[in-house]
Each structure stands twice: as C-alpha cells, then as structure tokens.
Image (cartoon, rainbow, N blue to C red):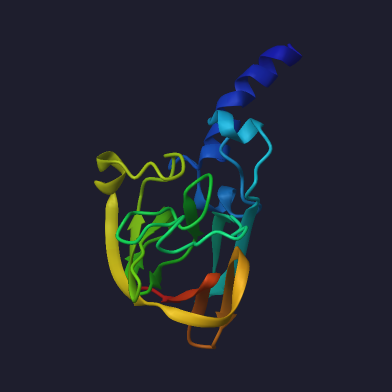
Amino acid sequence: MLGLVALLMIPGLLFLVTGSSLVPVSATLGPCLMDYTSGVSYRPRASPMGQVVFSVGGGDVELCYGRPSARGRLIYGGVVPFDTLWRMGANEPTRLYTDTPISLAGIALAPGRYSLYAMPGPRSWTIYASRSIRHWGNDLSPAVRAQEIGRTSIMVESLAQPVETLTVTAQDTGGAVLLHLDWATTRITLPVRPGS
C-alpha cells in the first residue's frame, strides 16, 4: 500500500518540480526547485541556484536563476556572445513567478510563471518573457520562442568593480522594485511595478 501511495505522488512531485501550469502559482512560490526531469540535475553543479523574493503591489514575486561564475573568463562578448539568445543564468531557465499582475520593464505579466531570457549587446539588451518554463537551459527553440508574450530593451550600465558570480538583487524604491542583474562589469536593471 505504501508503495502505491509513493507511486501516485510521483506525478504530483514532477508537476511541482517542473512548474507545470496546472499547479497553482502559490504552490510554487517558495524555495526554487531544480528540474529533476533533466539528468544534469543529478550531478554536482558548478553554478548553484539563486533566488530573489520580493513584494510588489501587495503580491509576491520570486525570481529563480542559476549563478555561474566568471573564473577569469571574458563574460559578455565571450562566454555569453553578443546578439545571441541567453537564458540569463545557468542550468534551468531563469524563471519568474508572480501571484499578482506586474509590469516587468514595461512587459505586462498576469499572475503565473514565466521564463526570462535576453539577447545581450554591448550597449543594450533585449529582454524576453515567455510562458515556456519547462524547457531546459538555453534551449530557446522555435517552440519556446512561440510562447513569448513580450519583449523590451534595457540599457547596459558599467560597474566599477567586477562581480565574480552572477547576482540578482531587488531594490525597493517605494514605487517600484528594481531588479539588478550584475555579472563581470555589467549591470542591467529591470523595474518591476504593480500591473493592472
């Protein structure tokens, strides 16, 4: 009997781990979960998972992302080529969960789950939001791209001191939360505001 119960729990656990759209948003807010449907998740990772949790307009928002390190490499224009789609992290796609309507750098997002990716350039990046959250890593295939719901352009800022490991922080300004993505000597900032 116990084995049958455990067997019946497996599909539910897979839904939670992969962030299936059949699971309520509130069930996936909390610790960032690794995608155990990929064999990569069963090996040691060079890039740990990071998360940023913050509130906007009385709702909860969570960003989950892989945190690669520079390790002496040229990052933008090197490890992350310019004018090429990038998952904005490592391992699983960068995923954003919200239980309230928000505006992410001008992209309107209803409550739900999204993946974020970018096309970095030397002076500006294009940021994309997609409903596809179950793809692995940098698999930004036509099927993933077909689920895009918005894009925006963000100017690049230069940092005085290099940042070794990709780091996202949330700065609450009162009217908006500024998500700063810092790596190497580059920063991009995504303002998050209450949506309608």
